[in-house]
Length: 329
Image (cartoon, rainbow, N blue to C red; front, side, top):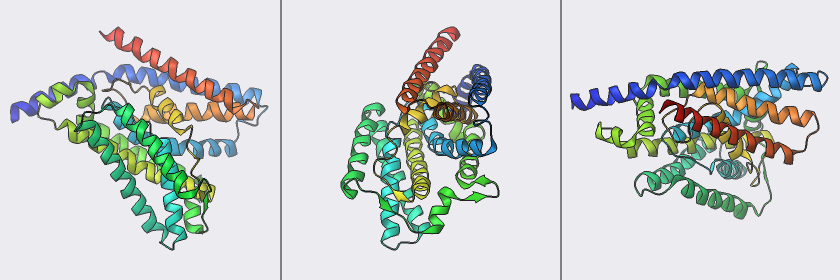
């Protein structure tokens, strides 16, 4: 057993040695972030570079960061979750329904987190135990969750009157929006888990080389299931915050959310093939995507063209990831 543990540690160290490249990429993305901020500030005639607008961007990207923490864990294991946008819609609708029926806001929040974590667990079992492709499974769940939200509401939002719950999405902790505080707190926990815990090291090991991880005594199936379950729980949190922000559970929200999450993760240096990634890269990537969307909106660019830009960004990030991996071989 000791030999297996030593073997696992040596393999994990090899995987961790790849992060120097990821750090360089993060610095490049950070530089791009600064350049874009300067660009939008200049051409918006000062409307972009304000404290109010920065808080607006931070509030917007906070939901991407919260969900991205779980989605990044999934991607580091070499899988992907395309259903996170529909999870937001479903969790928002269900928590609004519970509040309408008189359930206290904190109990409704606990229930939705557990429920969405259960859905994530089922997805993880399908991927880990049944060996189904995560892209196909989560694509199917995207349709199921979206359809369930629309079927329950008939396409009509469920309005929320509970002011305490609404304040979670719209309130402030001092000068900082509450969703931003929650996102940063969860991000720190996520980074700690990845870098300082056995679970985090095993996530990297499974994504870097699953066969080697299994041979080293790591329960790869359990790790994969946990990552999907965590993603579901975080979607429950994010969906509830969004419902509070919108004063309603809207079954049509989150349609482009998958794109923002995937773009933020990939731009932040996480490899689609697994084994590489960190939470600080997610933070930088999320702000880059958020600033692009916010800056283009201020400049009057149509949202249709913004979607095209995000797609191009993902393509460029994937291309860079491919070239980086080939350079290491």
